[in-house]
Image 1: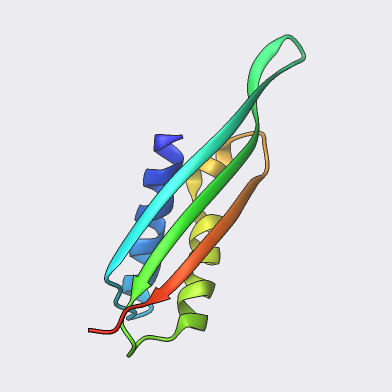
Image 2: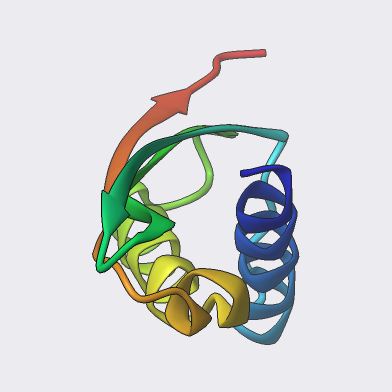
Length: 95
């Protein structure tokens, strides 16, 4: 799960940089469920929980779109034979 979290964060960083969006912090927690399928242990569900903090000068809607795009672009989660689900929170922090 650490690989999924790292890949998600790196994907977000690259997408945010390309979109000229700045952010203050990003926390990511991943949870996976294992089950035996066809005699082999496999992940059957992955949940990515992201908490993004942005400044008031940034768009919450754009931040949400970038988080979704990062989840869709994550090479590690895309390589697994299971669905991943993204849960996120965007916090606008006043300085």
